[in-house]
Length: 187
Ligand code: AMP
Image (cartoon, rainbow, N blue to C red; front, side, top):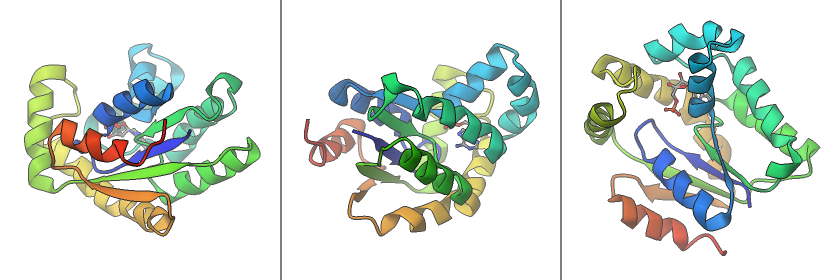
């Protein structure tokens, strides 16, 4: 099963995707994690993206699309993809469509975790105290939210007409969200 978790930063995509990995025997595809890994390992890509990432700006579509391509064509990962944080722009959504077609795959379910700005700010400030991520400063959080509204909202329109699109209230407690997700997956 291939699943997309969609929603603003701090909506709980990471937490729920880890749950989905467990119950569907899937593989988490977190572009944020992949990009942070590039920075940690000081790769050429890491050096290119470090400023944008720390500032809370989106990384160039071309870089992210290239990282995703490697995963989609990995036979070990076929039909096990749990997307967390991708696609985040219309270009990425269209790219994903093409790559899936070319690899004989499709998206089975799209979950949209909808949550408002106030809740996000509170959650990310809490996460900052636990994970100490360099992009979790308040100004950066607000910038990331604005970028989401400008760039990622159109992706919502792209997917929301699909019959496999499900909107879930992301301000609920973690286990309440998990229970709602459970009602849509048959494993
Ligand atoms: P996340 O861990 O999903 O919150 O992502 C952290 C940061 O990584 C974002 O603020 C962006 O700078 C970058 N990033 C993650 N996924 C993407 C993506 N699909 N497109 C562009 N930038 C991304």
